[in-house]
Image (tube, rainbow, N blue to C red; front, side, top):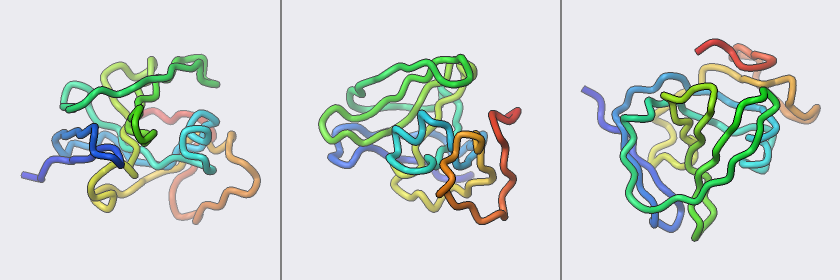
Length: 137
C-alpha cells in the first residue's frame, strides 16, 4: 500500500492529506491555470474529492472557464499559496497543485492539456501527449 499524499501551503496554516490514488497528473495550459501559476501552465494532480482531508481554512475564487464551466480555486489567505481547484465539470475530483505537495516528485505528469491556450513562448519536451482542450479522463 502506498503512503498518503500530503501537502499544504507555504506558511503551514493549511495542510491536506489523501490516499495516493491519483486519477491523472499533467500540465494544464488553460488561461485560468496561467493566472494561478504565473507561468505558461500549472502542474496538477487529480484526486477523488471525498478522499481529501483538509486542516485549516482556505479562501476561494470562482471564475467561468473557457470551457463554459466554473472553476473554484482554493488558496491560503495568509501566504497566497495555490492549493487545489474544483471544477464544475468534474464534481467528484479535486485538482491539487503539484507544487503544494510535500514531495512533488511522488507524481509524474503524463500529459499537457489545454495547449491551445498556451503562449507561443511556452516550451514542452514533446515527450508527453498534448491535448488542445480537455481530454476524457
